[in-house]
Length: 334
Image (cartoon, rainbow, N blue to C red; front, side, top):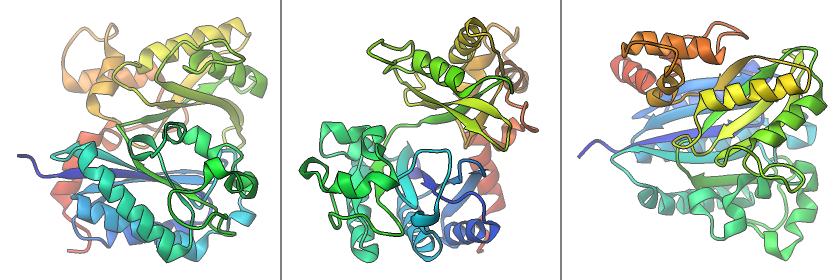
């Protein structure tokens, strides 16, 4: 029986203050048997994704510590960013890696949700596999209206929180907690001359829900178009929620064709957080005439243009590689 291993990919509404980001890192790394694997910070999005993993007890303790830091430092009344958001700790998903199932973790997410609601007087919604009703399985439904629309949303009897008060916390907003399968967060870069309207058109064609009643091309893909000022360009921001069925290379080259139809082009892509080795290697199929692991990885990086916005070291972004490196280093507090 493998050692139980759980991952958390918490999204916080802070991407600009190094002091606050350092406090989040310190809180996560202070928990024994929990390893901070990656930090992905977006200045324009004003958002940071922290990926950490370890035994379930440690991961849940680190997640609660993240809420304590957010309570100390973040005020959503002052927050502005390009990424949709409803709270300081916007979403806190847990992903079983090995030796533990979604069913095992589901009850623990409810315990955490209740603890966070009581400790911080914070409305908490359960989503994904932890959701108590079908509409709440989809994060976009919960987030619709964002922070500014929370008072109206929580006034609707159908959108009462699963835990906590039926009114938004003035500084922290709400939070969303749940257990879900692995998700790949990934942005496709458009040429600097591309418009936001073009980015939104491509996103609408790609995502499974489509646009204006027209079904999209990839069931298992969520996508929106946005403009990131720090990059000076628009992106198609993608969540691959079913990576077993949605191949990155297929989405990338479809986006390339759609952009070309609109008179613009795709120039590369950007990975947010980590991804399993198999999903990156798959992007090399048809372009790499060997099964050599390293060559496949390097080919995949080239095919997807992952190094366009900056150096991309796949050893630092592949989940299995990062976990092995963390285990070799040991815990920083030891």
